[in-house]
Length: 94
Image (cartoon, rainbow, N blue to C red):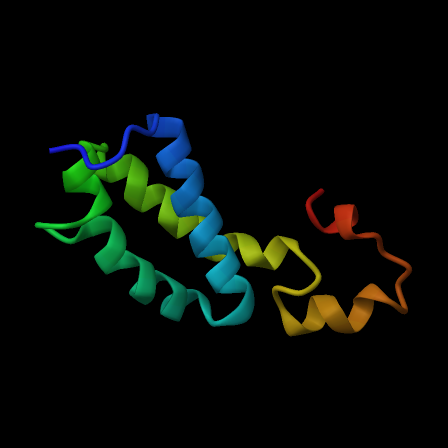
């Protein structure tokens, strides 16, 4: 039973965004631990209620949890060298 009428790409983008934002303020493991029941619960998870491919949803969540390293605020060392190194925010994604 589909609860919402979102496209597959929209759902994956939502999973990615929520996990990446959580991963920016807490550890990667904690972000996945919080998102996993929302995404993969066998009764009320997004995978079941929206008919989403489980591999796509879980891989998206795993990649998003590690994406915080591509920002200056995602890891302590990135933040320490950001100012003195003269980096711009977009330099971290390269």
